[in-house]
Length: 364
Ligand code: BMA
Image (tube, rainbow, N blue to C red; front, top):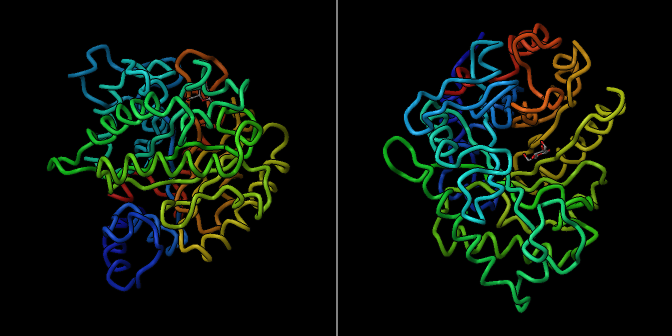
């Protein structure tokens, strides 16, 4: 039942006409091709945030530079790694050793490279600190934050140093042969909400787009990191027009994502998700982009059949992957993935066994 996608990806590449105008397709980006191949077969990949870094009450090895990268709640439950592993770069901008959740960046680099070497896909988000107030990503107290780091804002040089540090890290993620790795980068997410300093309440559409363009120009053009796949991911409480209102442009976006969580009953959650996936499917066709569920989950998963119910809700949409958020190692109820002993453990194994869900063994 489990099978390799690579052959399909190659075949698809040979027959595909020039597809998206996106930055990466022209380089023959194999990650984008693998996502397209999954969609063309009616399948999607499973992803988990921080899966290789820590999990429900365990954290990464003490010898971060030498110990093997093996720990994974997903692996412990189903004997396979997620196809997609997410990491967060929050803190890299200040030159910190660890990210905002205590993940050492040297370890993160090793884990990302190991996952890539095993044939997996890696995605990075960035909960960057507020450049104007010095607060965290959630410090939305000033409408000067974005304005301060784009042209004429006064904090541009400081922000360029942040981009320098970020680029150095992204550029250090390599394939086993030493070449630059393809990684998904998903900056300035959930920007149609007001909770981050780059959100709707504290910057204009022009400022948001200028922020994206500046980030892209620095990393892709100045630093030459052309293998990076740029993912756009608004929060889900938007309609089709709102989804696109701050869209940076087809030439600098490769993937269309959505961040959506369950806060009350399942039906409310899945119906909203389906609405978004419906218009995203149209947008994906119109703009020739893959669509993905870039973040989702139900904190504490208080529903023993959550995984197979999720599959029922999303399986007919052309999504490349669905990524559930992290299993915090230090907070009892803050988990969005499975772990041994969780109520949803058995159901996750059923989700794993489905023909249309792809894990690492299926895509390598
Ligand atoms: C949030 C929570 C926080 C975490 C942040 C960045 O959704 O999980 O605890 O610090 O993501 O990973």
